[in-house]
Structures are given as structure tokens and as C-alpha cells.
Image (cartoon, rainbow, N blue to C red; front, side, top):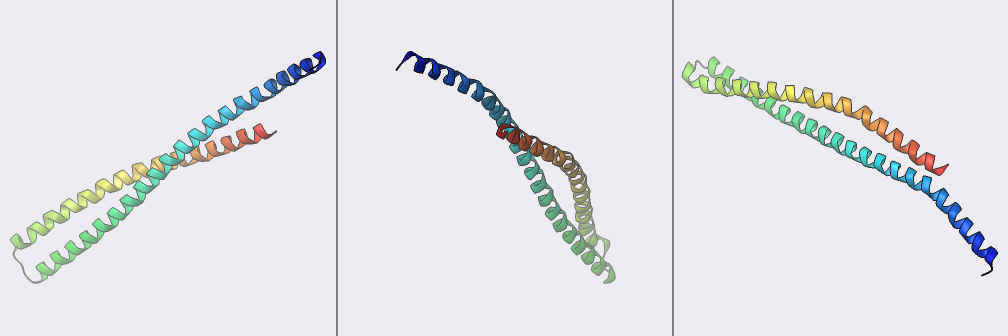
Length: 136
């Protein structure tokens, strides 16, 4: 290869190296943004699943509470002795306590969802801007 060809090859290689360095750096930054976004989305998915599962559990507990209340009313209406009703009242009290605890946890999980959702949206926008920046 003539000497001019070697020089031209070296200049082109140097130019390509200069051009690819920022792109690589941008892609690396975008990759980090994508990783953060994926982690946040996974956390949000877990929180939303836990919230839905908690809601299903609370619905079940409410059904059990309604059933116990109906049994207690029926026994009282039939004139049952307090000793026959007391175990049902104790069970209903335990379920009410469980429901209250579940509602407190639900509120905390919902608050976490409400905080994380805008962060996921911001991370999504930042990632998309990063990707768009590498295309320019």
C-alpha cells in the first residue's frame, strides 16, 4: 500500500475512534439508565402485585367477617347462651384486627407505589432522551 494510503487509513481509524468514543460513552450511560429503569419497573411491578394480593386477602377477610357477623346474629336471635357465641366474637375480633393491620400495610404500599410511579416515568423519559441523543 502506498504511503498515502497508510496515512489515510490511520486518519480514518483515528476519526472513527473519536466518533465512536462519545457514542460508546452515550450508549454506556443509556445502558445504565436502562438498568435503573428496569430495576424501578420491577420494584413497581412487585409493589403493585403485593397491593393487589393484599386487596384480595382483605376481600376474603371481609367475607369471613360478614359470615361471622351473620352467625353471631343468628345465634343471638335464637337465644343462644353467651358461651356459644363467645368463640365467634373472639374470632371476629381477631379478623377485625387482621383487617386493620392489612389496611395499614396497604396504605404504606400504596404510598410507595405513588412515590415510585413518577420516578419510573422520569427514568423512562430520561432513557428515551438518552437514546434519542445517541441517534443525533
